Length: 79
Image (cartoon, rainbow, N blue to C red; front, side, top):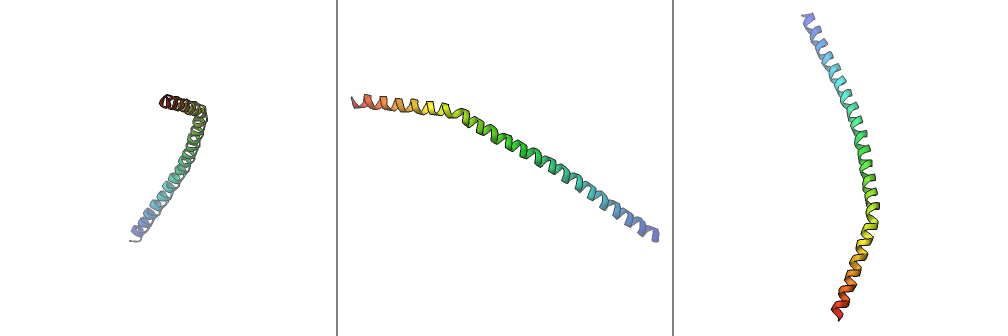
């Protein structure tokens, strides 16, 4: 009877150790994923900033063209 209790305690201990091992592995993978996600987010922000800088001159040209069209339309409407 004593050996059954000992075997059961060994089983419980090994399951506990195995659970802790898996928890550590999951935790390490989570840290790696977090670092990759943070790097991707920073790259995304940089790409968005760069895109906005590249689009700024185009937007200025478009707004000037719209303004010129508006003044031309107003002159023809006044006549």
